[in-house]
Length: 403
Image 1 (cartoon, helix red, strand yellow):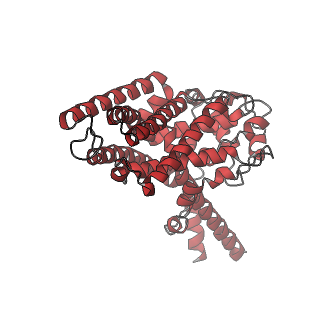
Image 2: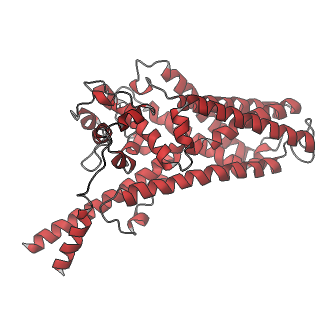
Image 3: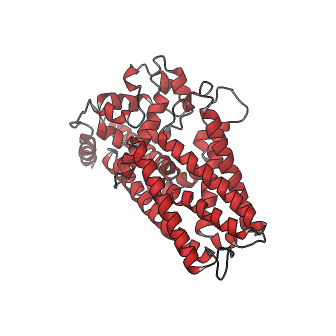
């Protein structure tokens, strides 16, 4: 029995010793995703030392930087470390070579999103600013044309909701479900590929099936609290961890809005009487989203004080520009509807949806995808950690028993 266990362990660890394909030129590919200063890194390890989340199992950013320098594309593709980083900026501030490891981890997350995406759209968006802009404009114009055609063909501009409405909530509900279905299809296909890369292709340690159930709580925990970001050290700079608070407000704002739009659109759109049981969540989401937008823009104009905001990818700006349009038009449309200016409310609603639809559809192909991939990464990381510890304990027990 002991010999059989030993042979099984030997087979399991054979996967560790294998040929690894090296692509030294791959560092130039990542440059298109924002990793501009990786060559400056000389592996001193200061970045991993200062990081409050790095440990003996997940050594980042140093390990990811090394993989990138060596061109270990497969190692990067199957790693979870980039997702375990929340880019507090301390590693970049600590770096003696100004290699900006925090920005490199951000760039690796963009690259990983493109690897999980089966369509190639994410890669095109991240590498080409014009491609994303033209796609967003096209979807916005197509959405506007379709909504105007439907509205004038089936209703009246003077009616906001109910029978004869320009854009009745029953139509918007079906429309939102179709758009949401497309978005979630690509997003969950990406999550499935993430699982394959990290838990099948990238995990040499055997993972018992029951660990997937015992660690399942990690996903909702990290999704609902963003607790890992809250645990990032701030070196006593402020009493309140503002980056976490804003990040939390944005994440919950997205979540509330998605639930309201997908499930409660009919009472949400009804009026002019305010339905407090749904509108209160809309107001809270608007405050969180608007506050996040203001903070985002303000910090990027104060680059000197916050190193993590010194560089902003074009996809991040597209994200925030669309979000600002959505929040402002949503607030204006709500006010116009409640004050009885129904024609203007309907026109504003069309403009609002012209920003909402491309914003939703680009989710699986942009930074938006962090909302799903991050909790999955925390979940998978907890499973891999438990599997590794279990294997170490098993190997230790076997070694003792063989003495």
